[in-house]
Length: 204
Image (tube, rainbow, N blue to C red; front, top):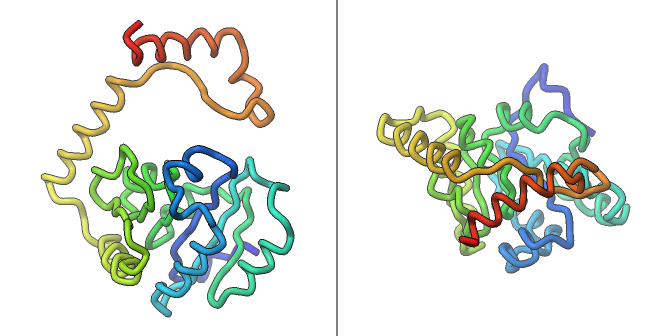
């Protein structure tokens, strides 16, 4: 149950991935057991914060009730309504945790620190931290939470602007998604747009 933020509690947010999916099963393969990872995060959390766990909207119905019961029974852990606005949670959270999700990319732009468990293109952004050893997570969480309340330096702002300029310059129109949740992705218009981008990428 999503908690009322009128009386705001301190929390960090973990966003679940849809599985199977390359972004978690290949890029984040060492951490692809998401229940195990949530348990590891709980063991590493400061007692001052709750862990909010939010299901991926495209994964609703994929996991068993038993999975959610196990998450809900973990200490200081809250299951969040999957339809709650993620951007609202990002702004209010002290930290975002994800295996490889672009929620970390979005939070970095907003200014909320994040921890990722895979080598992603956006890891160069200020306030994005890579955890490549689970034993370091305890210390990394505390380091990242502190950054929530530290403004970006001029150098970090410049790095962010340069990164975004690079991404925009190398971006193309088109949607890569699940046709069940977004039928537009299999339209002729979108496929043509995607072919232009992939042709440029492949140099053909």
